[in-house]
Image (tube, rainbow, N blue to C red; front, side):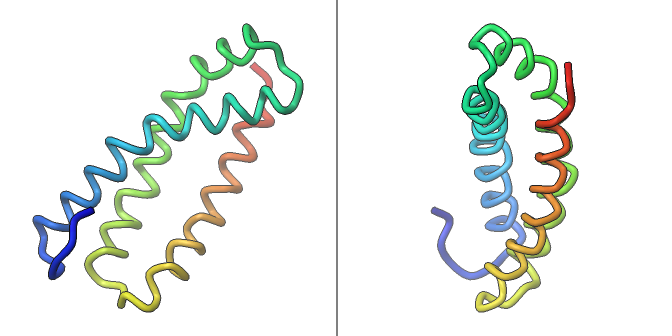
Length: 103
């Protein structure tokens, strides 16, 4: 969505689109659907999402903004998917932990 040569402005645009457009919608949706599939009621899911969404979104930004800034600006194109997958492994560990917390 932000094609062209890698520049600081393009990196910032890619990060903004990814982290402020996609992440705030995806993170709570993912957690809510996961809990629904685990058998929680819609009411419980609503409460759980409200309780954990801010922490998950902030944690997402803490991990992914620097990681993707590095990815978009330093990592060669042929290694960007591999790099992203390694970071995603760490993120999935955190998401698994958060989804298993009671509350």
